[in-house]
Structures are given as C-alpha cells and as structure tokens.
Length: 298
Image (cartoon, rainbow, N blue to C red; front, side):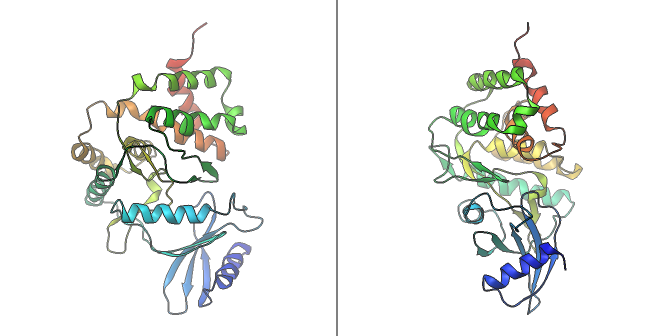
C-alpha cells in the first residue's frame, strides 16, 4: 500500500467509515489525491483528500464548498451528481460514477441536461453566496449586478497577480487583457446569469450507473451559460460530442455567432491553468493568440 492510499484509509477510519477495508489509487485528479475505497459489504466509494506531503488543503472549506456545489447542481438544476457520503476538512467521500459511454446518444442526453440547468436557474445577480475553489485557487464570487464587470474582475483580471501568470504573460499581454476587459460589452452579448458548473472540461462529465450524464468537481456560481459551453468546446471533446453543441444551441436559442465568442470566454480557464500547473499544456499560447487583436501596435 502506498503512502497516499495509507493516508486515505487512515482518514476514512478516523472519519467514522471504519468498515472501509481497502483503498486503491485513482487517476485523473489534478488538485487532490484520489482513490477508490471498498467498504466491508463490497460497496465502492470514491474518496479524495489532501494528504500531508501530497498537497495541503488550501483552506478548511474546500470540500464543503464542492459538496455544496454538487448539491446545488442536483437540487436546483436537475443535473445528476454523485451522492455525498462525507465532506470534511481534508476528505471528501462520494458515491461512485462510471466513465461516460462514447456514444452520440449520451451527448444528446447531456445537451438536454445542461440546457435544462442553464434555462431554469436564472438569477438577477452574478456570483454566489460564498467563495469556492477552482482547483487549488480561491474563486471569488462577490455578488454583482453587472455580468461584464463580474467576469472581468473575478474571472479574468484576478489571475494577473499569480506568479506563474506574471512569468508567462508580458507587460503587453497584461495590458491587452485589461483592454479586452474594458471592451467586453462590445464583444459579448448581454446574457442573464444562471447556475453554472464553472469547471466543465470534458473529464468532469461522467455517467451514473444507469447511463445518465453526471457532473463532478464543480466551481459553481451564477454566471453566463456560455462560460460552461466554452469550457466543453475548448477542452478536446470527443468526435461524438459534435451533436451536443448543435442540440444545445437549438435548445437554448443560441445565435449563429456563439462559436466566435468561445476564445474570449475560455480565457478564464486558460489563465487558471497557467496559474496552477507547469507545464500549462499550451494555455499561455492560446491566451496570447486571443489577446493579439487587443495589443497596441508601435
């Protein structure tokens, strides 16, 4: 048993789940240590935690905020999420989902689920009643009536102070981002706020045991629906997902120009990747390409 799985087993027992008999490491997590635990009756559960020496929790509320987000998506938005078994300071235990099937039919179901989430959870304000977490960085969700101001301040400009972002983006790049933020009302249409997942890359789309689309690892807030759409669009969805975008656009009444807006909306996630990971998988190059039209020529 590795140090990581030993830690998870120890923490599970300390949290009262004394019937857990084994833990196996699970792949895929970038911000925390994850494993699949087996209880005495054979029931599997998914567990993730912040193990000493493997990444301390950035705050005491990380898993509580994640659990709250999962509950909000399920109860307010009608989207399937894993059941919460335990949410503590350094441990989150969830029911086990399964990998999504590689079929167009699954992505059609996901289009209906995401469209329902976005069209039935409208809010007059942008934000959330508390801050939560995007990976290992705090996501500030201070309420704002202005979506452009909220997106600029709390989803784009907030990353400029991060050391890795300062290293990756030069003075001209940062100035270009500020100019882009000033012009957001010209570049993007006025849209209402709705409940969003907030970290909707393709690997956070899974399936229930019955095959229903299910979501994990949220960073929820009331934001533009297209922020979620942009995240799926630009994180290598599989070929069978093409039907998802067409159907989602039809169900939500998107205009024909939505694809052209995706690079601007995805800037937030690229900046978050630069801030937290090395290498950044090309995120800095994508940011610079999007900012190119906003640089002042000498």
